[in-house]
Length: 624
Image (cartoon, rainbow, N blue to C red):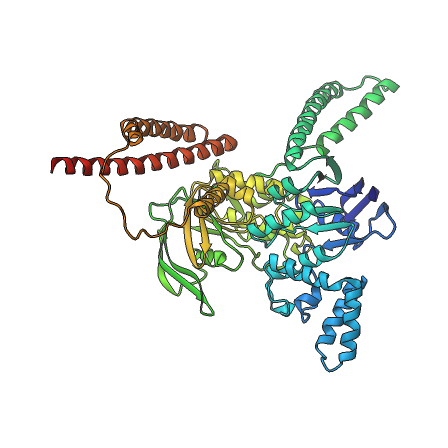
């Protein structure tokens, strides 16, 4: 069933055409992921679908009584309102009576009014709605339902807005960056919620795992055009590669034709016959297409400064806020090739740790030592103040007029902006006219162009498009210094991190491996704890003659050979890790096998120690 039909809509902003004659439909059950480079109009398209903005041209047809719920990227609230009141902002009957009932609770003397409203609540089943809203808020990490909105952080406000969108009955749920400010556990809950939700949904998100697990249609907004892929994110990647291969083949043919036409034009037309005029016109069309169809590519190739042997050492760091400890006795020495992902629930102290490392926050006790050559680049979660009247190019020039690339070539700020997909027509635009994603990309460029040799990143995926994230991941992989990353983006954590620091009850526990590796280990530990029976204390043990059983004897005879084989296989795997370093997929398979071999080897070594000890005891008794 078609819920909404979009026919040839267009939208321009500041003379920039964002959407050009786009057509598609939203059917019941569609889970649509909308992707595209920052500034291409994704949020604008969502606002048009939600009825917040109107298209310049085109037509949108909706089914009768269609209900749409919308989560904006920047939600708007009554700052003096309470959390629960702001969740119930809809104009449908249950919402109206809930708001009225909550207001009546503040005037308990009017018992007749409370009884009347209670009966209405019963009739409309509004009690269930209130219970569901509180459950969703709790899942999203909001437990104080009567807190004033103005006392919440920006991330908490976004979660209240998300709860408001999820609780509102709707045929189409529209979400703009719903995973921003959510921790990994909450994102997984939201995945399950949306996958099982009835009706249609359309969302803009940079979270590739989220798109892969929730969406069944991908819409890509590119240069004003919309491309449809009927599958999840993995399917989109496959089909996108096929489409680009086809375009490249077409481009090669077009260039060949262009060369022939150019050769003819260079010879000069000896006469102006109709046929020759047609060829001249054809040449002009091909030439025009040549400039308009050039492929843009984001390129981060900024050089980093030299890094000495001593980098950063943290000794017995402690930090508390309002007598609540967030970091308790943490020590670590940062290594040159570190790729560390930091995990933990919101509010546990992840950002605080980065700020302590960067020197912006002092620990209550403990010491942070820095090497003389250390130059930290800190990409913070919230963009530092930007003068809205400042032009994009002037903002970049504040970091330097010329930038050295990895190749040692000096390029201008304007050229670097071009590489960063900020074309010349936008470079002289005031910052307050740019989208949130475009500002975020500019801020990233400012951090990287200062040539840091230690990189700290706090939620870098927020408001960045997927293409920018892919190139950023490639940049980090080639970055010659340590990278410490706080992120809820499981895809980036899996691709980048080789160690994981996890905040657990103010303690920071370290694990080797990426995010998936950490999760699998936690699951294994939980299963082992659950399956291990509680041992009852033995009051009295019967003394038995000490000896190796038949099976133990056989195990003792073979165990050294088995250990040798495992150690040999481990050496082969270590070589494979170096050999397959550029193949991320293969690398993950090798790392998983390495973990299994290491676990088996550890168990064998434990058995060897046990059997060796028992054999020596038997020998000692026999000699007596």
